[in-house]
Image (cartoon, one colour):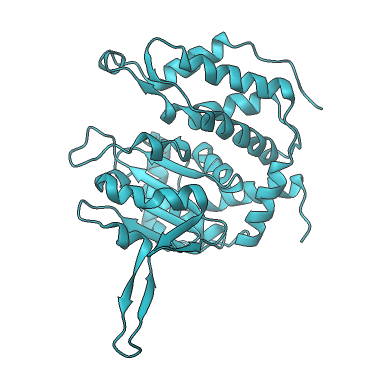
Length: 320
């Protein structure tokens, strides 16, 4: 099937609507999940337990027809539990590869910060290179390959903060947030007429079409002035006195990709300034490391990024 940008927009919105049959409200969060898929980017959900993070990922996987695997991260989880290992077969006298859950399309890394850093690092190669190495042999992972991880706030007991090198590999960090009163009442209404977990989910697209959509999104035009705007905004965070480590070039690339995807979501083959503004916070907030005194004073990375946005002139570009 030949696809165009309007086709990408239509499919994306259908996916959001289909997930909405199970996940009440949160349409904006669901939009960003879809943007992550069509930019081939990993997503980190940070929020309190019970806010439908796992349900969202599982439902999303079903709507795009992808293979799904889930890993519950615990303090005793080992790297081999993620990647797999070789097991000796008495029948053949050889070692047989038992593939781990990483060999999938959509990997849900549940409560990723409950495992120690060595185990967290087992995901690094897969997230960056879309491959994993076992006993010196490299195995390519299927495409699309997306890690959607959940983590509890770091003040929770039994959590290990993700290393900067790993957290920087997540394209976005999203927060589900508590439902509104109306949304929570709707959840109870749906539960009364049937378990939400048993809703029949329609498959909207296929893994092959997701890959095609990723290729189309890459061709969306982004004006040179908007590229400069992204770079200037990111560089401004590096000279901010309240910041210990500014945003890396990987942050600029994340905004670049997501702005294109945001334009495609709305059926455009060109990026406008609002596309950039709409993706800046989810793309950058987790990459900013504040000084200890700033954290003690309750300053949030989002506030510093918003200040940088206000101080950086926005180019007046529209269509090509």
